[in-house]
Image (cartoon, rainbow, N blue to C red; front, top):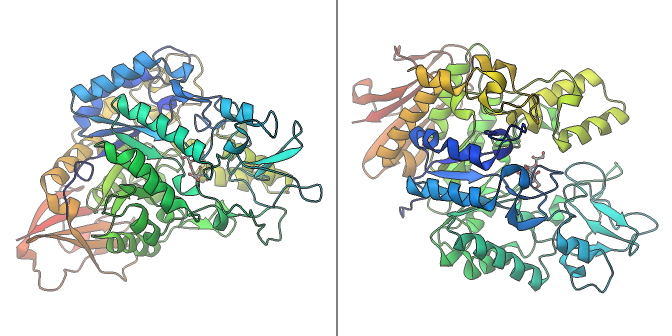
Length: 553
Ligand code: TEU
């Protein structure tokens, strides 16, 4: 398998709004990130992915961009951004930026022009349609609730917005749109950035007949007509040829609804499109038939099957991204581990998991100290528009308030957006403002970076160790994934095989003691323990959430 720097790197994701505030306005900023660059270097991560920092009215926290060429005032200035890039590069670290080009803000100049008249030169930058029988052009639901079409009286037409009505979808069928986007990408790349995380990039090609979907509800999910659409591969190829292939960078496409088959094409090792994609399959296993807030218990068997499928099917064909959370997902330890009695043990087990799979691992801010979900007692404390829209809509439809809050406590995107917990001073050391844009999780007095740095057994120190181990054992990065104990409902076990080396990984995903079995032809005497989250191991039994990595001799 061809070695590449982005395959051997660890990515750390920063949600700038919640990372570190230096101005005292309760909102994180670029200077705050600069202050923490040494912390990140020490952790052992190589690449920083910044969530959007561009000018934005912040309807969706920066995913609604009104100017791709400037920095959001709240976050600082272009000089601050340049300094950040420079500080990272000085330390041999890299920076990747969020590329949000499925849609813009409705306050972007292209859209402001586009809505002025039907013959405006920017009209076809977006999708405008006449209504049908006094209603929307079709019955697609938006990701954030309600119709995916918004009426605009200026020209008596509707525009498409798969996300909020302040996020109109760009029309990639129009070559001028693509040209303008490529120009903007080159502008950032020429500033020296090291790549892009591409927001919902497999949504850019739509079925332009815009067929309605069949549903019993007022609006239905039209994903089959805009996810992995007809021209998406063609657009990726063009973008690669025009832009990406001219730089030594990494690209990761966020691709909801993509299967390993899509990934094998989008992230093919031939290098003609993207380097890797984010799948959503493993973070949808606890979604019920009515969507993400319809929560069903997560079964390890389903997770194993899914991860095994991606590991095996992409091997030698495409490259995986490895993540358990991000700014849209609940906290990993609260979802896949136990954030109460076994918080430390289970967080370490989960690290062992992502750091021993084939692919590029992503850490989300706070994951390295085992930050947990938040349960705000009232909806007023939530900030995320998806959460708020869902709450209002469900309440209108007669849902039970307590049940709703329970679902929100588990699944809201705000779980991962509470401020980074640096120490046990005011606002967890995130900001000295009287109120922060979103409340700090009160458990910061115990769970914080300062505490973790001082405790040799902390999750943070385990992370550092695990990162070093991964980097010095190529088998953990490039190894073939061979699962065993497949029918076991509590243990995830696999062999890693690369050249002539073998490693064995055992992960107990349960609160109970579990017994292990050895793979065929391997005996206890062949095994050297490389790392474990427990000091004393009872060989044939795993303690709650115990993780072990063995090298086979
Ligand atoms: O998310 C795309 C997406 O479809 C989901 O992650 C979605 O936001 C979430 O699961 C809803 O349940 C990306 C960004 O990561 C997200 O923050 C943005 O809101 C969204 O695109 C629109 O730009």
